[in-house]
Length: 414
Length: 87
Image (cartoon, rainbow over all chains, first blue to last red; front, side, top):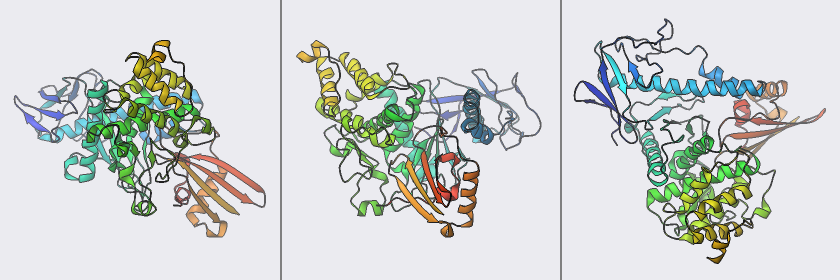
């Protein structure tokens, strides 16, 4: 995939996306209709846009932004997360926050597009050939303001290049293996921020984007160094757009497990590893720091063997041991093991069949309060469409973690 | 006064803990604790998204024990740095 923008024949230029390009062509109009261009905000951006499907960029020599935001992103974010804000109002603020963040990204994308050599007074018109996810990378520079400073060319730095390339691969995995177009299945742009905070021992999904810390270089190193972690975080976005599993209790543990499952299988797909490869079931093997390794920890979690001593975060392996007071990252081990057992029972590659059954269950209309039993049953239902042998393998996998599911007679015979 | 801060969550899922006597708190930590106790988060406050940290802050003094559950985005930064992972 081409990263650098370049001029296209006929007086336009192209912006690379994950699956193609967005073609930019000159537009003689100086201001598209409907653009609000007040005095005031001037952040160096030179683009503008309006709300039609076609995005327009104009006045490239004018150091003015074409779109203002009356309320800052930080204020909206605080309101969206404010514990003293009424829940109905908070939901409104959350929608406003999400919309503002996306509009800012569009504006930033257009600003970057303007840096490709269009320095004449002509306008620029962006026409989407097809809605495909575009990647945006940002550098937090060890602060905690998101998304941080835009990184126009990720190829100049190994960390940004790795995140850019791996995130593109996650999108490719979702598209080619599962038939999904990005996080929202509608080509949502993919936003990643690196270098978050000082010695930050975490990566997270903030509801809109992926965020990666650098670790403390003792217990953890950079959190983007494990492909499965990148797949894990992006999958949280998928879950948010599908079932919206509430991040607490059983639904929260399932939310975590789903991210581990798709993260691990993405990494297996990337490395062309079969389900039988034990290393393919390790989560976070690439982010363990020297102090953790010295103590014998080789991963955060082992999906096939969640209670193993080489796991930095050991987990229960049986549904009988589900702890209602436990963290979602602990109880997720139960469903993790069920999936790993299922995939190994089927044999071959996890990405050929097993993950498709899990995906079908995830997009089957799960409620936000789905329980382990609900989800297990949904996986059986999804597996039935692929034959009784597959359905029996799913049921057997759940039984391996002491969770019983109803199985149709046809599958029992298998 | 004694302060105990437990950190849970994060993609790693490994808990971290830190404790301080009041005389061990830096000025920034004391200020953060004062703010937190003055404006405790609502019981159901949560950070948006997934894999965020959450903190349990336990303060013991002559008045008794105060326990606060604090989501990452409401945790004073100096206090957030206190918990460490014990390998």
